[in-house]
Length: 140
Image 1 (spheres, one colour):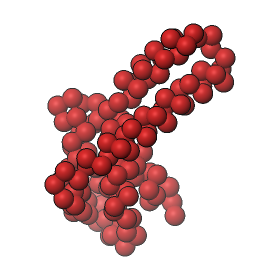
Image 2 (cartoon, rainbow, N blue to C red; image 1 turned 30 degrees about the vertical axis):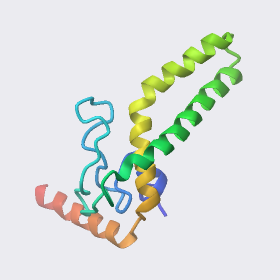
Image 3 (cartoon, rainbow, N blue to C red; image 1 turned 45 degrees about the vertical axis):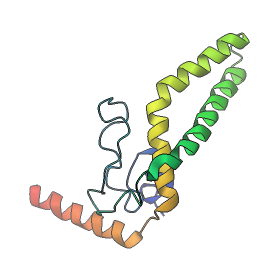
Image 4 (cartoon, rainbow, N blue to C red; image 1 turned 90 degrees about the horizontal axis):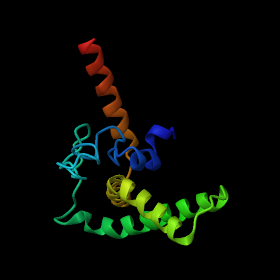
């Protein structure tokens, strides 16, 4: 399976879990106005992104795990590169990275949560790909 049709691609690039083509969020995670707001449907395959009301509350648990992973990664990088930080400076560096990454961590957590419940569909992805090629031919 090509990378652009994988769960990892869908999660990291915030794409539809079923077709890997449509956008998952209303806007960039760093736009405060639509902070991590998930679209109602995929614009490409029309997948309804929410199974039930409050569906994405479960992503808070995923967000906690991703945040811990980022904190451990920052600590590990500080140790690998032998940066001469005190314990307080290491803690501050971790907090700064977490604050800067918070919008993306929240978005990726929602994407991970959606990818747990929605599966990639090869037939729908192929149909979306054909339709997008036809649209580009018409426009071009």
